[in-house]
Length: 156
Image 1 (cartoon, rainbow, N blue to C red):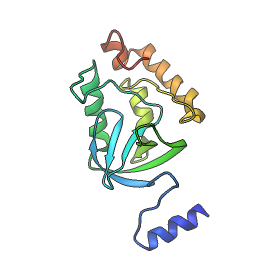
Image 2: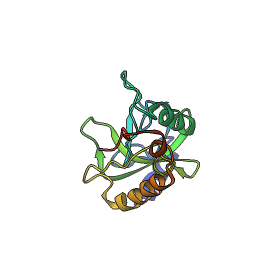
Image 3: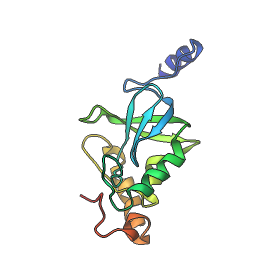
Image 4: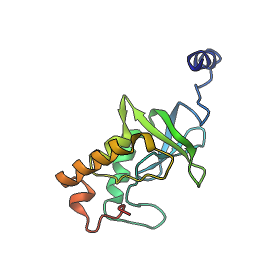
């Protein structure tokens, strides 16, 4: 049934959607390292990802680098969104795994050391162990925040 719905929406000129929100969209702005603004006005928070702060006057260690990395991957580009166990966070932002050109940004941020894992149940429960493993490898290799910051600002 979902494939039929997507086909109907596309034939009518609309974007495919899930019960949570759009499945594809253009990113108008990378707000910071872990949050996006989509062309339709929706704010998206990456599932299982927490980057050091770089907005609202905050300048955490490695925050500007995480923001720049995110911006370079997604800003102005069409992305694909996949949703987890919860559609939104307490701030009303969509929670999603975001991919661009077949690469998942959530995993790239963690494996390259631009982010720590942030699990707020139930969102992301199905992939938590995968992300914790990526973070452990980034720590061992001292990538990103793990080599540049003491203490690591996103570690809670």
